Length: 241
Length: 129
Ligand code: SF4
Ligand code: FES
Image 1: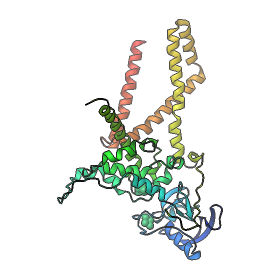
Image 2: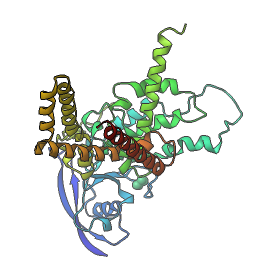
Image 3: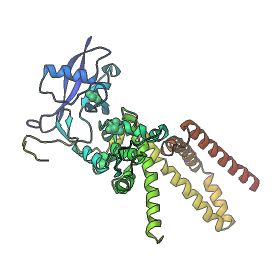
Image 4: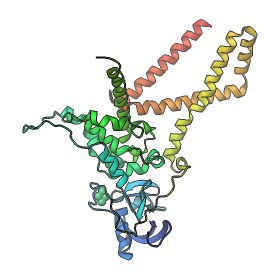
């Protein structure tokens, strides 16, 4: 264990006008994660606020910026930042206190695309799915709703109404699911002004995603679907009567 | 949401206009987008060339002279480099949008097609001249 310095962005809404960085001393070895370091600092200063739960990259609650890049605190290690390390709250979200941001806009975008199986068929027989059918969407089903991709997305930063990477990837995931019949209900969200066409394939969302979901690919596959949907709707409305 | 807590005072920093300078990844993205600028110059050259062709021999010779100027050649070499860089990024992104085959195969096929089409143009041009 060696002692080292880290910076943490602090914001106390009851006292501070805006966030500021403070530096702390922590004990670290090769196994010390950013989350471990935060917990050490919390021992020194119990007022430090941050979210975490599983400590194993599953719950998605420990997202922070590490040197300006969105990361899961429990999956990021101090050994990879030998020079300097500054931990700040996730970008593009409003800071409530210290490292805790308001995830509400993200959750609203998620629920807007109806991320559940839509299938009115009331059957007691299981919906059988072949491995091929599973493979079509499996990658996009690995999302843990950590929100890192929203912090990586300049389009979301510019326009918070943009549905954003995880929500659009999830819409694509359900649209690709052979058990789902809800595509027609989701397409208006994809086609809309703040849907897939807001994406310019910056691609940093996919770079930071801890679960290799590749939301940028999902959104751009969604553009193909959206284009098909628009062309079909032109044909439908223009006279096949 | 009902807000019964008056000490809530969320702080949202303004989105930085220079966001794309902050990380190398963003800089490369902007470079990819900026490759359209030299391409605009090249297209202007082509349109000027077509116009000159329609105006007869003396204008055509003027255009040939213009195209041989060192700064025009330099800009067009830059255009070629920029377009190749754009093609590289595009060919790498395309398999993620339309996953029809393994990405490395799709990238190889796209480069092959580029070489074949470009080679075809050179042969046609050679035959015409
Ligand atoms: S797509 Fe990836 S980065 Fe975005 S919320 Fe899901 S797991 Fe996190
Ligand atoms: S604590 Fe659960 S993902 Fe990091």
